[in-house]
Length: 239
Image (cartoon, rainbow, N blue to C red; front, side, top):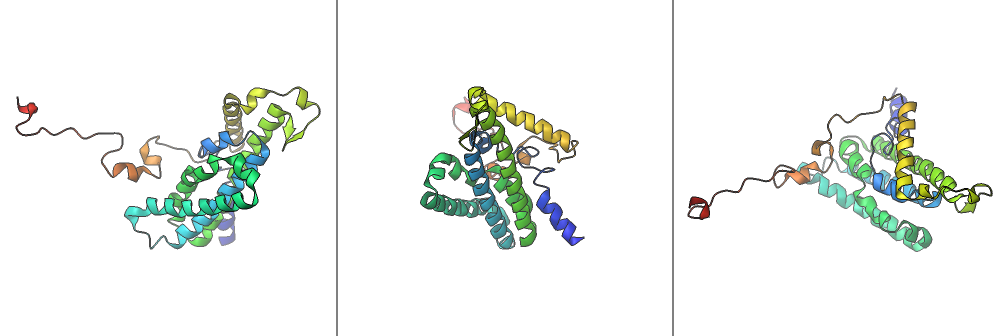
C-alpha cells in the first residue's frame, strides 16, 4: 500500500494534476518557451531540477522555518537553486542560457514551485516531497514538450531545428506567435480535461485565498482593500 501511495504521488503530476493543463500554473514560461522543442525541454528540465531540490530542502527544514516567515524563506531557497542552475547553464550550455533568457531567472517566482513548496513540501516528509517534485517536474516538462512540438512542427515546419520536407513549405506561422500559443494551450487543456473525464482538482474560489503568496499581501492589511483614512484632529476634516 505504501508503494502504491508513493507511486500515486509521482504519477499524479503527469496527467490528473498536471501543473500546466489541470492546475493552470506556470502559464508565462509555458507560452514563452514553447515556440521550439529545444527551449521547451531546457526550461522543463531546469524547472524540474529546481522543484526537486527546493522540495527536498524545504521539507527537510519544515519544522525549523518559523511559520510567519515561511514564504520568504521558501523564495530564498528556490532562488538559491535557480542561481546554481543559471551558473551551470551559463558555463556549460551558453546557447541554451541565451535562448531561455530572462525566463530562466523567473523560475524563482514560478507558481508551480512556490505552490508545491507551500501546499506539499512544507507539510510532508522528505521522500514524499522529492517524489512530488519529480512528478510535477515531469508533468511540467511533458506539457512543454507537447505544446512546443505542435507549435514548432506546424508553425515552423521543423522539429528541434531540423526541417520537415513537406511542412516547411506549408507552415502556419501564427502558431509560433502569441495568439497561436493561446490557441494550442486551450486545445490541450480541453483534451486533457476530456482524458481525465473532468476528475482533476478544481478551484472553488478564484481569489487571493488560492495564492500561496496571499499572506504576504495581507501583512499590511486586507488584500485589495485600503483602510479608511482617519480624521485628523484640528485638520480640515473638522471644518
